[in-house]
Structures are given as C-alpha cells and as structure tokens.
Image 1 (spheres, rainbow, N blue to C red):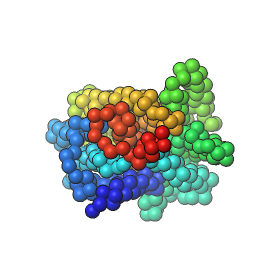
Image 2 (cartoon, rainbow, N blue to C red):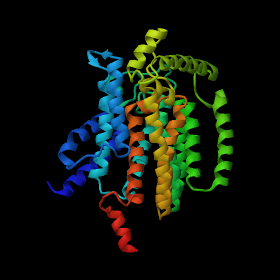
Image 3 (cartoon, one colour):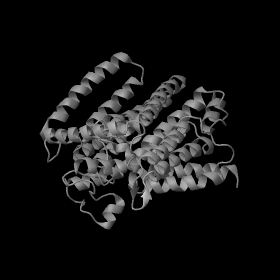
Image 4 (tube, rainbow, N blue to C red):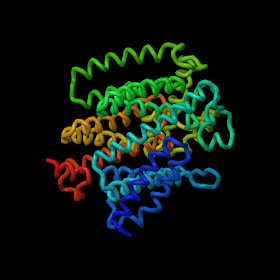
Amino acid sequence: MSSDFHSNLATRMVQALIVSIILSPWLPPVVLLIIGLLTPFVIKGRWPIRGFPEGIFIGFLILSAISWYFNPSWIAWVPVGVIPISVFLAYYLLTVWIKRGLDWSWHEIQRLFLLFWILGFYLAAVVLLQGIGWLSQEETWWGRLLGYSAIFQNDLTRSVGTSTNSNLAAALLICLALISTYAFSVLKKRWQKVAAVAAFFLFCFAIWLTGSRGAWVGLTVGLLVQVWMTGNRRRTILFFAFLFLLACVIYTNQTLIPREETLFATINVRIFVWQNAFRIFQDHWLFGVLPVHFGQVFTELTGQQIHHAHNILLGVATEFGVVGLSLFLLMMGITVYRARKWRKMAIRLEEKRLAGMMLSLIFAFIGHGMYDYTIIAPQVGSLFILSVILINWQYERRCRVSVPSRPAKGERQESTAS
C-alpha cells in the first residue's frame, strides 16, 4: 500500500479517537484496540522503547506485570494485571502510531482540537437536556451504550452527559471550556470570537449542571496555566488571585452547585477514602495493588465498595507504588518542560497558544484529580494521554534537530512562503 494511504489511515484513526471520546464511554477502548491491531501492519521499522513518553508506558507495563506477580488477583477468572498491561500497551502503540504514522504540523493538531471542541456541543446539549429533565438518566441498554445512564452514582439531579458519571462529564467539559478560550485567542472574525465566548459560558453552565465541585478547581488551574504559558508573570499572579477568590465562592456556597449532599458530607467521605487508601499504600508501597484490585482490597479493609482513591496522586501511588508515582511525576515534569520549550521555539502566536492550551488540559485533569481520579476512565484517560503524546511529539519536531522526521505539510508550506 502507498505511504499516502497509510498517512490518511493514521489521520482518520486519530480523528476517530477524538470523536469517540465525546460520543460514548465505550468507544475509546475500541478505537485504541483497532489502532493497536493495525500498528504492526502500518508502521514498519524499529519501534522506540526508550523514547518519551514511550519509555514511560513501557515502564508502567513492566511494573504492572511485577505488581500482579507479587499481588495476584482475578476478576471473572481474568488476571487483574492483564487490564493495566493492555492499557499501557495501547498507549505505547498509540504513541508509535502518532510519531511514526502521522505527517502533521501544529496546524493539524489545532484542527484536531477544534474538531473536538465543535463536537463538544453535543455533550453540552446532552447535559442540558438531562438537567431540565428532557433526557432520562435511568439505566437502560441504550442509555448505558450512549453513556446517558447514571451507572456509578445515585444522585440523578446531576447530569452525566455521555460518560455515565457526572465527574467524568465535568472533566470533559473543563477541556471544552479551556479550548473555548484558545479559540477566542486564535479565531479572526468577530462573530467567531463572540461564539467562542458564548461557548465558554455554555460549557461552564454545563459543568454547573454536573454538580462537580472539583471541576471548578480543575478549570481554575487550567485557566491559570494558559495565562502562565503566555509568559506574562504579573498577569499570571493577578489572574491567579482573581480565580482563587472566584473558585472559593463557587466551591463553598452550597446554593451555587446543584448537589443533594452538603460540602462537609462529601469532604467527610473523601477523607474516609483517602485515609484508607493511604493505609493500602503503606501495605503495598513499592509496587502498589493495580487498578480494579484496589477496589477489592478496599472492600476487604472497610467493607465498603470504592473503586479508586479519588485523588490522582494517591491513586497512582496505591495502584502502582512509589515506582509508578515516580514514573508519573517524571512524565509530568518532562512534559511541562517540553511544552515550555515548544512554546518558546514556536513562531506563530497560534502555535504558542496551542502549546499553552494543551498543557492547560493536562493540568486541569490534575487539578480536578485532587478531588477525583478521572484519568482512570477511558474517555478522560485517552484525552489526557493524547495531549501528553502530542506535546512531546511537537517538542521533538521543533526542538530536537537530531530526531529524524519528515517536515510536515504545514511546515513545508510556511517554509516556502517565507
């Protein structure tokens, strides 16, 4: 087959992944599986295992096998270790697919996220219809398939969008709101800027309908990172002070967020989960207990069913130990450094803002993750990892001359024009 066919196939599959994140909680694993199965046939040559973040995913894959060896457990006669091993193998193959299969400049990445942004209006519409009671959240086969049914929560006053859970829907809506601010800064026409501002407030209203308190922290952190990535320190400090005060008002005022539970009730539940999760970490501090098995151990310890630690750092630590937490923090640190270098190397303002927007998505997930552990879900996790991969890929194309790579089409056009 021709190289153009392979390039078009690689592009379509990445686009399919970004579309699947919006449409259903079950589609991203399917798309990742298809990409993984196609990779050996499409991507020829040696695959890197020491690159970044490829090496991180390989590290987590090996760590998952070691952790399961020391803490063997099963779910429906399937070894629990198979689940994280499959996930990190899929993320590794996605990295190979993008780095070796795509011929993209930052223009194509911009189009990808703007496509995600446009599709996000479907998610916002579902949240709004659920909020006014026109779309049922009761569990049905079609509601479960499309993500409309509230599977992992009892409070049906909180919209779940297409994610079966309000906190997961809120995580996606945070990203859509942050992309709205990026669209406002790069779109040229006045009506487009007005539409971007309107979209930002629409997605914020949709976040409010999910009743997620942690989402406002994630949005605050994401907006702060976007301002920080512009390089203006004074503006960053002033914006941080404003967002911090605004977040405090929203977070503490019970009437501003539609929730049946009081703030203190949810905090008490979180503290109970965090305390017992830390006890699990103390017992398995080196390699952790792995996802899914965490819920089994937590039930044995407390008698209550909790599936994860509801904190991203504590969750990684309990599931993968200090080794996994070190790998995760290393991935975050290098990604931040590379995003900053990419921004400095970029010439066009749109590309600089793109680097800031993508990094803001990652930090929004981490900010939200201080109260929940959303990146463990396929929808949110796929978007998180995709952002990490694309940032590091663009850094390599822009800043590492020694990395052999064809100039992308957009880069060749810019070079010709100059």
